[in-house]
Length: 208
Image (cartoon, rainbow, N blue to C red; front, side):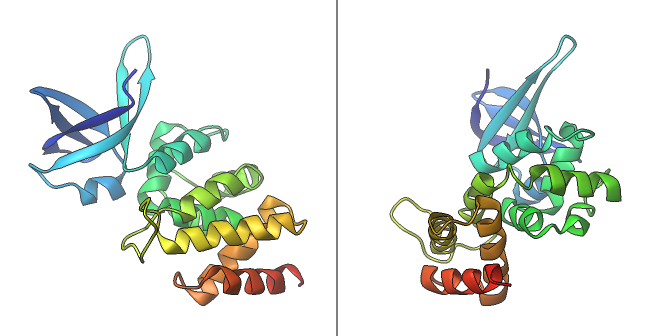
């Protein structure tokens, strides 16, 4: 089972790229977001989800373990296959997807190709209780630039959000409520808000 590929981008297609690893070209299915970040001839490291079927072996590539986890989780929803899951990750970063689910914002999910209103609502509803852990992980991932971070490379914004969610959970709120409150706080205060500010704004949101 292939879990990771490190190689040179040899070709880029509409929904896939060919990654040259030691002279062997691997066809990897990728989201449009990931494809936009690739450049021909550059060296990349992709986390891989391998699907083995009787008639084919397909490789799905991601820029992080968190993104692969979301890919797998999305497919647990009825009506969501690998193509639709990639479509969702193509229009929403893991951070944005976590926030959309926490806030019940199905309209954001509906932007993905192949996702209608009913399916978008089902995704948000079914993943509401499963997503807190992924929400924290998603908030730990930069969606573009990284605003500082610790020695492990985790962005400061992600650490603050994770700590705020943990603190609210320890105060007795369930993980879904805590994640939703912190998502609202981050949206209002910005990614530079520290843990204390996120907790205070989160508590205000939970008190409504």
